[in-house]
Image 1 (cartoon, rainbow, N blue to C red):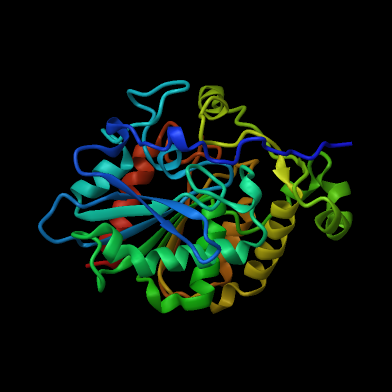
Image 2: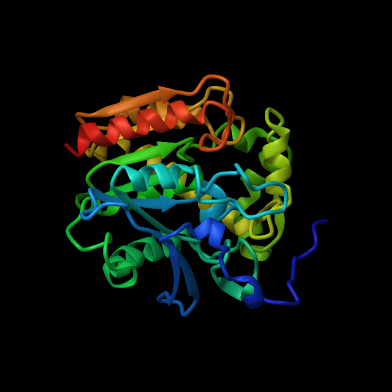
Length: 330
C-alpha cells in the first residue's frame, strides 16, 4: 500500500529560491506575492527587447515542472544544472518584441502550497484563480513591458494547456489568441496505463480518504532519455507519481474541457506529436474539430514525444509559433 508522503521540511526550501543569473538573462527578474490562500507564489519576468512590447506571453507550465525548466533551454546547462536564458525560446521571443512571464503553480517549483507538500493542491480551481490573480498583478509586478492593455497570449505546455483552456472558458475576452504545446485536454489514453484503470473507478474514495497519496503513474521519455535524465535531476521538478487529489482534479477538469470545446472562439494553434505517450493527442484533434474559432490550427510534430520546446526539431516549432503570432497580432 502506498505510504503517505509527509515532508518534514515544507516545500519549497527557502534557501534555494534564488534564480541564477544565466537563467534570468540580462533583463529578467523574479517576484513573490501572496495568493488568496496566503501562499507565496513565485513569478518570473523576461521583458521584451523593444521600446514597446507587442504583447505578453503568459507562460503556463506543465505538471511536475516549473517555469525555468519548461521554457528555458538546456543548451549550456546540463544534468542537475539550471536551464539558461541564452539561445532559449524566451530570448528569441523577447528579441521579436514579446514580453514573457509566468508563475510556478502553487506547490510546484518555487511556489508554496497546501500542507507544505511538493506538487499538491486541493483544487484546480485554485490554480486557475492564481493565474487570473497574476494577470491582475502583472503590470504592477512586471513594470515596463507588462503594462495593462497589451494583448495577452496563453503560452501553454501540457498541464498548462488545461490551465489555459479553463481560463479561456471562464473569461475568453482577456486573451487575444492562444498557443498550446502538447496540451493536457484529454486523459483517456493515460487513464488506461499502469494502475490507472484500477484507480479511476475508485478515484472518489481515494480522493476522500487519501488525497496526498502518490499512486497515479505517467510515462517516461524513452524517446529522448537525455531529456528524461535532466528532468530526473532537476531540483525544483517533481519526479514522484501523481498524488490522488491531482489525478482526480485533472480528470474532472479535462472532462469539463472536452464537453465545452465548442465555446472556444478565440484564435489558437496547437502543436502535438502523434508519438506523445504522456498526454493524449486526441485532445488537440478534438480542440481543432470542435472549437468555434475562425482561426484554429493543428501542427503535427513528427519525431517528437512530449517536450516540444526542448526536443530535437524545436526550432521549426518556434518558427511556426512566431508566424502564428505575426498572423494574429498584425
